[in-house]
Each structure stands twice: as C-alpha cells, then as structure tokens.
Length: 333
Image 1 (cartoon, rainbow, N blue to C red):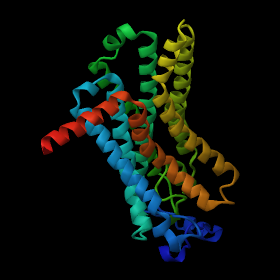
Image 2 (cartoon, rainbow, N blue to C red):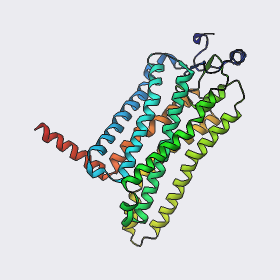
Image 3 (tube, rainbow, N blue to C red):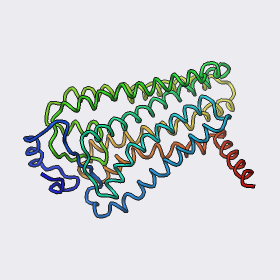
Image 4 (cartoon, helix red, strand yellow):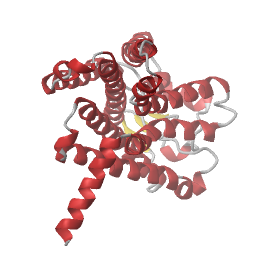
C-alpha cells in the first residue's frame, strides 16, 4: 500500500486493520498531517506559521548573542533567559524542518528512526524549557526574599549546575520513549495527527500492547511538566506571602513588577498546552483544522513571544539593545 492511497488526515478503519495484519517493527513509514480540507491552500495557510518560526529563530538568536556579548547581562536571571532562548531555538529546529517538508514540498513520508528522533528532541526541549521556567521562578523568589544574599546563592557555578541538571533530567526522562517504541509493531504506513511526531501519537498508532509505553509517557510528563508547574505555583505563593509582608506599597509594587515578565512566559508556555488538551477531548473531530492549528501554535507561540516579552519588560535588555545599536553607529561612523 503506497502513501498515495491514503487521503490527507484520514485514517480508515479498514486501512488500519489491514495494515495491522501486516505490521512490522522499526521499519514503518509515518505520514505527516497538515490542515485537513485545506491541502490545496497549504502554501498560503502555512505562511503565518513559517513567519512565526523565522521570527522566533531570529529573536532568540539575537537574545543569545546580546547576553553572550554584554557583560552587564551576565547575571543569574539573564543566564537563565539565555537557557530559555537556547531551548526555544532547539524546539524550532526540531519542528520547523518537517513543517517545511509538508507545507512547501508536499513530502509527507517520515521513516520510523527520523520520527522517533524528532519525538525525542521535541519532548526533550519542552522539558528543558519547563525546567528553566522553574529555575527562573526560584530566581525571582530568592531575589525578593533574600536580596542581600542573591549574588552569593545564585553564582555562575550554581547556574551551570542548574543547567546541567535540567538538561540531564530531560535526557533521562525522554530516553526510554524511543527505545520502548522499537519493540512495538506498527502498520507499514501510519497517518500521524500532526506535522511532527509526538509520543502519544505514535503510541496510539501501534498494533501491539502499549501499556508500558503509556505508563512511561505519563510518568515523564508528571516528573517534568507536572512537577515543574506545581513548584512554580508554590514559588509564587511564597513570593506573594513575602511581598505582602513588605510595609511600603511602593516597594510591594516594585517587587511584583520584577515577576511580570516571568509570569507572562509561564502563562504563554502552559496555557496553549491546556487549551490543546481541552480541544482534543471536546471538539477535535468537529474542527480538525483548528486542532492542527492549535497543535502547531502551542509549540510556536512560546519561542515567538518569549524574546518579545523580555525585550519589552526588561529594562536591562532594552539598555543592552541600546548599547548595541549605539556601538554599531559608532563603528559605522
């Protein structure tokens, strides 16, 4: 059965049953799914998505460059921001190639090994970003609770250890996924729900028992996104209690204002995931194109918005930008 025999975005029960009767392990071909019903207009529909990707890559690259080259930004908060920008770049690099293949080259086929690798990197960079957001919440708590010892607690050495721990956790939590997928049987041709590979999507397409895979996926989510979001909420509870203990209303407002940027990117990171989860459970089959759009945006919006939020809200970032442009004008003169 060739890929051309399957219509875009459709998964016929007859096709699935026939494919499962001739299922294989490790040599399956997966078909990416674009916007159901809009295949003829994929070039135009994908333009905003591609633009988001390009702007995200440029914005996060510039943030990394600015923090790397400006000594005034070599502080814990901006070191964590550089980690966030690096994870956003990794997420863009993991999803953008298959989007280009599908929307501009009409290439839907993806071999099992490439699909499993993309799944590993997408989930890995997502867990890294979640861990960095937790570290940034702790950074804000220390800065408000104990500002006199802030620099001695969050040293460059401590930041390096935090970064290594976040990266190590992401690798350890994601490594079992692709390994366990190799023992499953898949149809020779399977249709994915998105224009990239996700663990839950691949597990749902398997023809063999997936209880272990589902359990491993659930545990990895709970130990990453679930654990991080709970501690972020706890951190903000402690921050709020500390702020309310400050006598001066002006000082309270000043302390809370230092958390606005971080709170914005936390909401930008978690709310699209929550919205997509609700959509998949309520109206996924009624509005398949909307479900695909939300699935793409929930990966693309955070990398796009994070540099914008910090450039608007952070005085130090704005000053760094100003110094960079002034230096450029001097060099040109």
